[in-house]
Image (cartoon, rainbow, N blue to C red):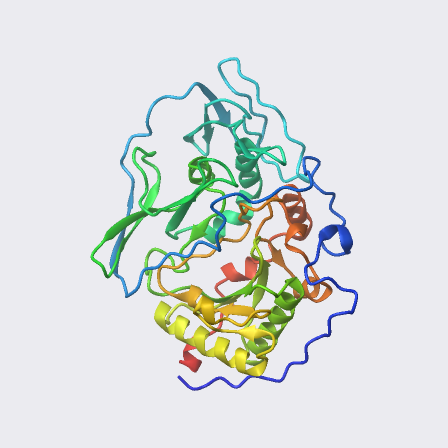
Length: 413
């Protein structure tokens, strides 16, 4: 492919008194007008199992896949049952109580029970929810029920970004600070309405991934202990051809959020010069994701190749800020990694609106370029305030779902 020519870009200098890492209590910005969660306590720490965004390796190309629905039974009956219409109130059956959470700026469509093991009916489908009072962020007072309620509250803007894509499950059976494990195959028993995406791997493995198609399947996946959601980049009808190109901007030790923001603006400047629309979100962990909606056509390998070329060009443009070095041991400190390798076939990144297993229960949240220019912190966007932000701003990543306005990457291949 021809080498991409990038524009010159002048980085804004960091003010002498600016901290490398922003903190919402020390600055103004998009999260400062939102109150800190009432359950927040200082000094919380991440426990074992803390790792970088969970990527999944699957080298080589895939063969045609088939799409099917699961047939396994839903399992043993639960203790209580409660209907969840799209509007109206919900109560746990069998004499149980459903504690009401504080409204999230009008986004709450229904209330979930908050304790015990229950069955709820939503969209005509029954979902079993278990261990609802289990602490997931003990220091913050956030339980499994709170996590499920958050995903129910944002489901209308989240689900379109997940639909028709294989889901890699990253399960935290002991909460956000506990150990986690990856699971690709849809577990059995499972509800018979869980749709599957069957993917053939070069190794010969054939894996039936679950797909999150509606509120019921979303609650089912979260109830398994998933905190963040990690869907494939390509839809299930052609898992070789993704709908977007993206860059994962991750600070190397010695770099902070200021450098990440500068790198994001450099990436935007370069992409816009090439005529590519681009959109940003916080990762909810340490960095920024920049996505480009593309017309479906190029293979995942071709998208990966372009991303690699652009990342290396960015490194050449500003080597004091950017690195594209794949090997961890060789990455220079104080730089920001423009991680092109996350575009590889079978890899995944935390989805939009995913809660992350971090001390403040931060959320991977769409942001405007104006917000990035002013400065944001990862902790500005959390499980307690993101529903309210969505109510005010809507889905800032709606253009990534549109059929129009997508870039034809073939011109650079």
